[in-house]
Length: 321
Image (tube, rainbow, N blue to C red; front, side):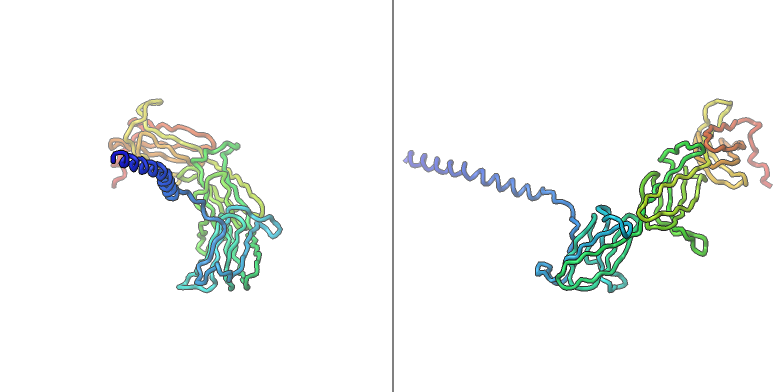
């Protein structure tokens, strides 16, 4: 009886050893599926229709885009969107989309509007799908690139962190305002735009160093434009003696040549970028007010010291009447 029990135990043990790898492999496979990293969406996008495309009811449409009518196909960076031309609730229903370069869509017979976006450039074209015939359509974007930069007088480079560009429509509205196309463009970055003239605003710092210019973008070309700022970086501090330590808890008010306030700040130092010209700085500390006139020369950074002396002080009650 003991031998029979032992034999049964050994048979059970052998069976368990053979089954274990199978169970382990199944567990690993299940875990692998749950952690599987699928690739991103391909350039092929299917429409949202009632009929199954597996039945082969539609036609394959290959879409490509070029910068000019004789240019090469754009290979990346395009966003494709396909719409039905009839609006629903005031909007065109989108039936397919894709990202990349040339794209292939399987569309059912009918009429569609195809839009291609390439940065801020874009084009729209109406296409018609007939039966199951394969078809190829091409869109000419009539677009180019714009690369912006700025320097100081004499070609001195401006730190990129202090420089930004905004791109506006080239034509102003009757009220003189222009539609903003792209804000906060970093220097030396390429912006894709339809061919045409644009109004570009270059801002150095955050006060009044601003340069405006009209720049034309040509189709199929990269336009590089560099503007020149007439400005400088100025640091102001309130001191008890020339070359002394800056006095903390000081309130600053900056006035332009016309006496209009253009900047206020609080702290031991007041640092800013200013366009060339004449200014007045007013410093207030412990109910005492001090002021100093100074001139900003383009490209000449400087430190302005305001002396906290009786001679420089202004009685805050003067002119109160």
